[in-house]
Image (cartoon, each protein chain N blue to C red):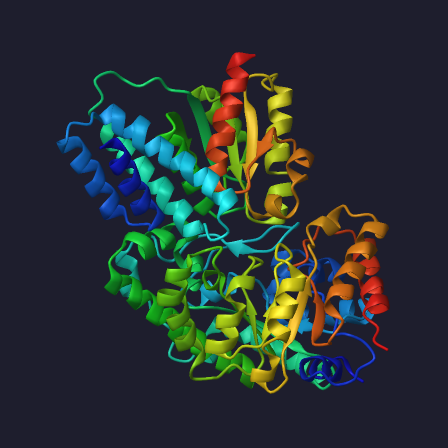
Amino acid sequence: MLDRIIKDYNDAVFETDKDAAFEVVNNALANGLTAEDVVFKVVIPAVEEMMSDITRDPDANLAQHFMTAQIAAEVTEKMLLKFAHPPEIIGRVVIGTAAGDLHSLGKRIVMGCLKALMVEVLDLGVNVPAEKFVAEALNYGADVIAISAMMVHTATGENGARKVRALLKEQGLEDKIKIVVGGAPYRFDNELYKTVGADGWAADGIAAGKMIVDLIRAGKAS
Amino acid sequence: MTPLDILVAAINGTPAPRIPIFCNLLDQGARELGMSQREYYRKGEHVAAGQLKMNRRFGHDNVWGLFYVGKEAEFFGCDNILYAEDGSPNVGDYVIKSWDDIAKLQVPADITAHPAWAETATCLKILREEVGATHPICAYLTASTSLPALLMGMDKWMELLMTGPADLRDHLLDLCSQFFQQEVAAYRAAGANVLVYSTPFGTHYFVGKKRFESFSMPWMKRDLAPGGVGGIVYYCGMAPFNEVIPAVMDELDIAIHYISPLADLAVAKSTIQNRLSQHGGKGLTCGVIDDIKLIHWTPEETRAEVKRMCEIGKPGGHFLFGTGVMPMAIPEANIKVMLDAAFEYGALP
């Protein structure tokens, strides 16, 4: 039965059909699956499946990324209310777009994925000053600051990730809080993230979810 | 031959001394005139003067009627533009904050009577008078399926598109298509002859094959039907779109394509060449350099990339060398190296 549920859910996500995905989840619950099963055996594997699809399937597209993340986040949010015990949280992330940048799609996809992957996320919104990234990260106890930028000057300029790095250094927080970046400029130049002082980057929002989880786990292990 | 003659020759596949060489220097005009971005974009004569000065210095073929992409939102009431001294102005506040705002949205009855058009018209008039007989004048026009992103933000638009009520979505698209139809007519009347149709949703990078066919294609047909495709350049906001070139050529009749640096240029070129006969032998593959890498490339790396692109594009003709929206962080020396290389490797026997 579980295989059938997983297949039906994956098909619905692939077709970007949110209603169908929720129907699969509701039927699964009615047939005896627990909320924990839905999240850990259906939703998270589906996000991971999409991560590998992106590298395999040239037809995987932004609309699918967006819907995968939104469906996963919504289902997870609903299932968490039904959990017998609070789940183990992997870590915490503050996320926003760089100062001067209002492009919010990538941020939204990353947030959806992280929520489904049991990472707590604080959305700082768009056009976020570097000082706010650092102050909010400290208040929230964040492991990672995630900065999205779609324009070259907001990705590489002095008020974006570079300034966040400088502030972390100044305040002695570099071992405690990591910086990740994403957005079009980094896709065109895969080495760009290093020049702005980031610890990691991902080519798309779905892959970013896994990269951030790996970074948090590596940080906690060390 | 003038740059305009060279462009026409490349499209027609007739003899010319070299390939057309486009370089999109927009924000650099402020620096050229010693102005802030805000002051530069305040007046059409500034935008024209900055470009003409750079054009004389670098010798590239094209000029632009475009100020900044977010300007289209001003026609819908956006009055908050975010200026930066190191990059392009950007929409600072979206006019659609909730779905309820869509009902209040209006397309100006005549966009050429709207204040947002006045400075564009001034810029185009100067460019037409100064170089209109010799140089291509470009315009940037956002497709109906992508314009909502400038009005409400890409994530909110994606949400409405994927999960919202179809009648509301279609109403917004209808307004955006009406705007596009007016805008393209206005630019044509003002002398623009290279009309860059920016349609990110017209690629499989944004939407899958099924949605491209059922959603993007019908709206693109609607955008383009009244004015036709004369001078239209297919462009997907730097996203790769090789897979849709056959459909775009067959169904939209567009034979000029501005290829993403992330796409395989050789594949794009052969796909377009193979369909030229259906377009009266006319068409153009525009090879676009990855201008973000130009920020740090050495002269040797820049020259090698230009050479590589020209070697792919030149055989069989119908090829143009172009750039994206050149970031301001590119050192001027690299712009010069790139253009020198394009003139050298773009020479035709």
